[in-house]
Image 1 (cartoon, helix red, strand yellow):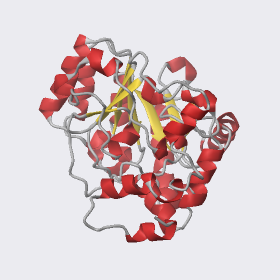
Image 2: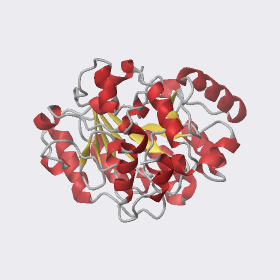
Image 3: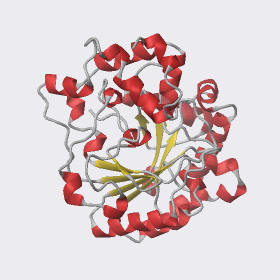
Image 4: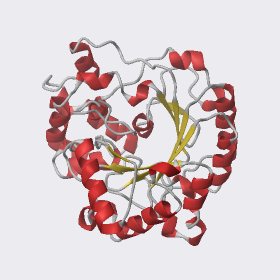
Length: 351
C-alpha cells in the first residue's frame, strides 16, 4: 500500500481497524522499516515480558470538556463511554486482593465521571500507596461543581499530573483550543494555593509536555528548567516535575500525520531514534491498563487500538495474576514511540 493511498482506506472498517491497517501496512512491507518486534530481536534483546505489576492505569471514560489535537484517546464532550459502578467495584475487589503500588486514573477528563469522587474515596480505603489523577486543568474551572477539586485532591493526597503543552499562550492554545492556556494558569494557581507543587507540603504536581508537531520532545531535564523558570517568573507558579511524552502514531495524531503527509517521515524518525536501553523500562512491563468497560490491556495505547492482553482472562472480573504475569506483551509499530530517544512513558522519559 502506498502512503498516499492511506487516506482512501475502506470506509467499512472501524476507526480502530483502519488505524491498525495503517500501522501494519505500506512503508513496512518493503523491509525498509522493520516491525518493532524484529527491531527488538535484531538488537539481541529478549521478548518483552511483564515484570512485577506496580501500576493499574484505569480509564474511567472518554468524556472530556476539551478536544485536543494530539489526544490519543480521541476524547471530547460528545463521547458517552463511561465506566459503570459495577466495573469500579470489580476493580476495587482486585486491588484489595493483590498488592498494587499505584492507581493511575485517566480519561477523557476523569473528574467528569459522576462517581469519580466516590471511587477516589474507596481507593483511599485500600492499601494503594499512590493515587494519580491525570487532569487537563481546565476542568477545574469548567463548571462551579469542579471548582473545589484542588481541595478534594489535597484532602486525599492525590498526585496530580496535568498536561500543559507549553509555557506560552500561543503554542498551548494552538494545540488545545483558544483560552486553554489562561484557564490552565488559573487552575495551576488554585492548586498552588492549597499546597500543590510546594516541596514541603507533600502534594505532588507534575506537568506533561507533548510536542505540537511531527517531532520528538526535547531533553526532559532542560525543558523542566525552562518551564519552571517561565511559569515562576510570569505567573508565580510552582510544580514538581515535567514529563515529556512522545506523540504516538495513533488516533487523532495519526490522522494528523496522514492528512499533513508527515506519517512516513515521522515513522522513520521514530525508528532511527530507537534506543535499546529504553526497552527494559517500557511502561507495559510494570503497568496494566483497564478501559471503561473493564477490559485489560498492556498499555493505554494498546487500549486505543483495542489490542487486549494476550491471555484468556481479558476482563477485570476474571483477573488472574498468574496468567497475566506469564503473558507476552502485544506489540505493533506504535511501540517505536516509547523507545525513541530517551524513551517515553506516562511518567515521562525512561532512560
